[in-house]
Length: 126
Ligand SMILES: C[S@@+](CC[C@H](N)C(=O)[O-])C[C@H]1O[C@@H](n2cnc3c(N)ncnc32)[C@H](O)[C@@H]1O
Image 1 (cartoon, rainbow, N blue to C red):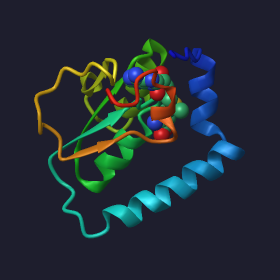
Image 2 (cartoon, rainbow, N blue to C red; image 1 turned 120 degrees about the horizontal axis):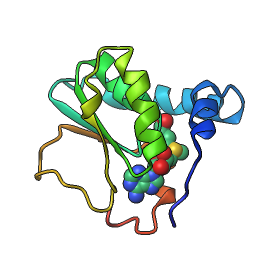
Image 3 (cartoon, rainbow, N blue to C red; image 1 turned 90 degrees about the horizontal axis):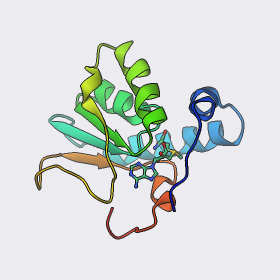
Image 4 (spheres, protein in one colour; image 1 turned 180 degrees about the vertical axis):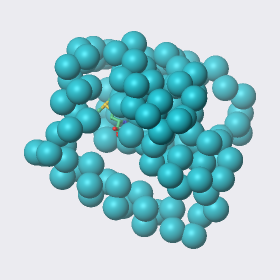
């Protein structure tokens, strides 16, 4: 199942303070807990990056962050948000998480946050 969010969805998602805001905060806190003590360096990949939130989080932690999304609206939104932090915009690519074009063991950290995997028509491929 491919869900196509319009550009406006990405703008709203970035500023959401309601249900999504609470979920984002809880997930972020669990993520930080999970990574406590993990050496944060090397390349990271965020699958279904949407607005590049976890590319930005990973950058702050010390990773060289990359991201993919299969929506052109998401890639555009991410490019805008990461450019403000000086992250090269080509680090986000239009790509299907079920058919990725990276060599094995390329990434030290792979994230797929906020139920992104539930959007997939093929969970096992991701
Ligand atoms: C709920 S949003 C993701 C939120 C984001 N991970 C975060 O935590 O801020 C789901 C995103 O996953 C993308 N997506 C869904 N299926 C995908 C797939 N197979 N490959 C890549 N991106 C996918 C959608 O285009 C959408 O931008």
